[in-house]
Image 1 (cartoon, helix red, strand yellow):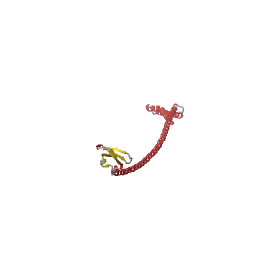
Image 2 (cartoon, one colour; image 1 turned 45 degrees about the horizontal axis):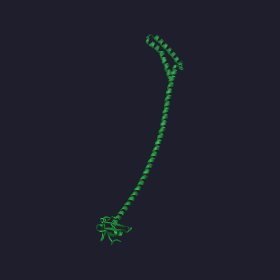
Image 3 (cartoon, helix red, strand yellow; image 1 turned 30 degrees about the horizontal axis):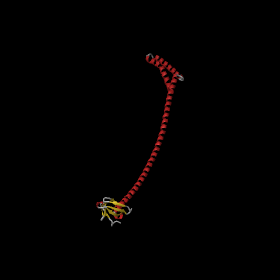
Image 4 (cartoon, helix red, strand yellow; image 1 turned 90 degrees about the horizontal axis):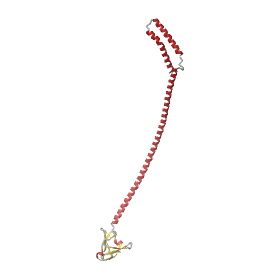
Length: 234
């Protein structure tokens, strides 16, 4: 770069030196001798210019200083660009490391989430199995209760078919009073306690419908009618 600049400077100087002679020869319109003289002068000036160029030392000149400054400026710019590139490379390296760390973290999270899903699925399956067992136990209990209910209903129906026998539970002690004011005294054979009853009283679900000296006490629940008298009392 430096040599090219020096060559161009010397070339321009030579052209400036030769231009007056050539211009004079072209515009004077003189004789051939004058043209020859002009050519000789141009040749001598060219030789002098060549010698000057050969002897010219650009070291320490203003031109050299300017050239050196320009070169330093270019070098500084290049250094600045290289430093910027180094910073960009460092930034990219840091971003690459960060990206790898994020990838590793995401991979770890994915594995953790997969494990959590598997644990949740196992828990759900265990709960489903537990609920199935509870359902089976509940169905068994329901079936057992239904069986007991059926048995109880059958037993109750059988019991309902049996009539209540006052003669086995009570004994007519006496009948007192007159007319509609008759009252009867009965004894509970199980406890030995006496109870005075009149028409309309209820004894063990049966209502006293009538009391008489001849027929004794008549009980009725609407479906079944029983009579308790002296002869039937035990």
